[in-house]
Length: 211
Image (tube, rainbow, N blue to C red):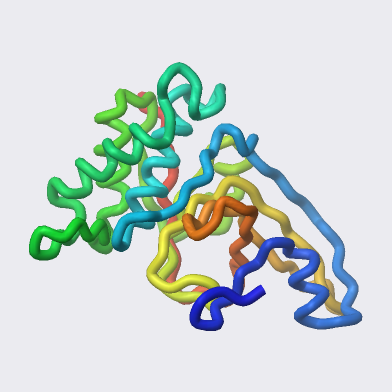
């Protein structure tokens, strides 16, 4: 359950809720998930590379309009990542003394992802919003993954993840709702979930079909 520096890693929301408050009643209210073959798993191997990897995940997904696995017809995650890293180095990231540091400047997520999608000749553009919960759920229900830019939570600090599913539970005697997003966090290729409660600062970057 715990990752580096004591941070929480959630692999199964139901198990996490039961372990957090033994004996409480939980009930799955709703859930949805995009086909995992269309949202490639990735491992971050670059300094501060969470945003470029997450952007590459959207580029790989969007190559076929989300209608086919992201690796088909030569469009794989690798080429998408190389494209996004090149664009990041061209003014979107803070590069230090020749070191490839891909830290994306705050507030530049949507312009960066738009540039990547355009360079990949995607049929999508991108927008960002602070109205995260409703937008993220609606996008996933529509079959489109989103990027969640997290300032701080018990799970992640200053990190960008790709969300492609969700599960919402009623927990405890009062039936409080607890929402979890199924994510690619770049630290493992195994399933991970982000608990939406308790996050201090979060925005969403999502795909928009070009007019």
